[in-house]
Length: 196
Image 1 (cartoon, rainbow, N blue to C red):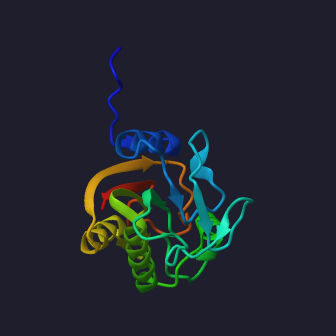
Image 2: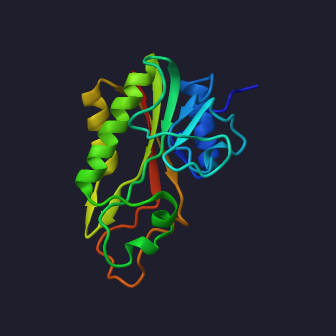
């Protein structure tokens, strides 16, 4: 029987993660320091270590993804799913993602958070360990190509950009229908795979 060839674009987050796990970290995701409610893990093995800054479900310990109670070079695979929206004004707080995943004050706050969590992931990962980083570009008056920044910041930390998958979700809810459209609506997320 021929093995299915996995492609880089998905419409189902769990199928995307299963493909990344199969190809890049067959032992599974070991650490999720931004666990939230665990929606990644429907049909996927839960990580051994689950943290969140404000735990939402039982079994998740309180910790900041920038300062984890994990030993240096002790983890095989980490996943990060940080907030991607920034710039609080107008009705921004009414967006679904604002209510569920938070919103950062500005681009500088996003840069600081992302660089800090990338640095901490690098610290806890074993040599050859894998970081899966979910991010999304963001448009608010102008477009910020966040996935390009993530690539740059991870490379600066010492990671090798090994792979990239795209999650296409046409029903993405982040949009204000009352504004004149000046940019394409972003309905996809990126899943970077970085190797230490």
